[in-house]
Length: 554
Image 1 (tube, helix red, strand yellow):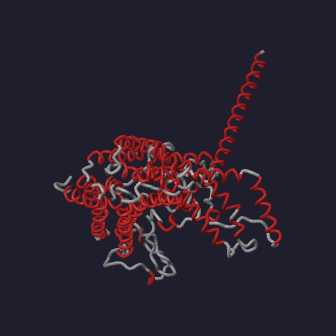
Image 2: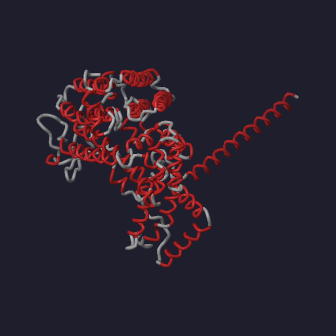
């Protein structure tokens, strides 16, 4: 650690109430902007200089700011083992799985150490390691994809595959990219390589030269100061909100005996504000981290060929408006921690599914376990994940069974009454998830149950009642009413198109949370029956061969 660097943070800690390490984290986001500005000015033709700058910045954060010497060792072990596996077992089909298991196990050991230390305000290496697990497990899969023929790869795999193992300098730069080192966002190696050699900024020949992104001097990286500053400003606003709201809405208020003296609606509102306050911290740090990545150029995501407008959302990790205005559980979860969602989809959910087969129970369960395991071992995480799965199933039933009553049966366009459905679904989604995420903030089992008890377990009761209704004859009755309504209008009964149905992602877990745990259980039972039948058939075949052989011997 640099001499005397703790002094100003200890002083400010007494003024604002945040811990010195939390203030250091905010400081690291601020200082990453001038550092990213300097990084952008390193000559495009000298990628080795860029790597050296990136590595120096990453080590400054880890050692100069936090004195995380043990953290450097942790990141080195994870990175070295993954690179070694990719080098020596490159053609093995088991290589990415071995790397994945090692990375998750290594991270789990550190998470348990942090959990037993029980000091959430202290910054340690586990946050950076969680980001690195996503990057390195993806790296292992990308290397494995580089050994496969193209006809076995999806378009996404083709764009990410690594045909030649990177140099140690390039690899170290990828690992220690300082703007996203501590909190993310994560990204794939080929994205880093495209930023490093500036091929990311190549403009297709079909684009009008007048629409090409503006650059400075001979640099290929487009100007990015304005979108970066907007992200910085929004991040500062969220952090300011957090520092002011946390004085009134820390999770301790949910556990206080005085909390029960308030009316039920007031208690639900306070629980919502506790969750919102916790989210503002993540909105702030993720927005600021994304902004520094944009300033360095890595957030570049192409240019619109018609308008010439540049997209800087390659590394977007959070959509606060999408979360706070979500009218269903999938939108709520899908706009939160978006890069983790992408990692779970492309490197867990689709990887455990055999080629040319549709993902089923095993893929959903593997994604759920990975997501929960990746977050850590606090009971609160698992309470939230399990309950969120059932909330998703109930929400899906409402959307498929109730929502069509507010759409025109012929055109499927919203009726004037649809706004009332939207308001009700927004209120139900926000109040339900305020309850669901409370353990995610509180972490401890006993305190999470106490907080839930203080609001009479309302989301569990409403979710359970909803599932009971949709499992009863009432669901068939509602479907019959819909069919009659549609028939009377002279149209056919069809499901209204949604984003999920159009993209084909309706069945995929979001953040590891299954959309339909009931369906997953049914699929598990069916798979078990098939395996039992196969085993029984195999045993009978062996018995028949044995008897036939015995007769032949006679």
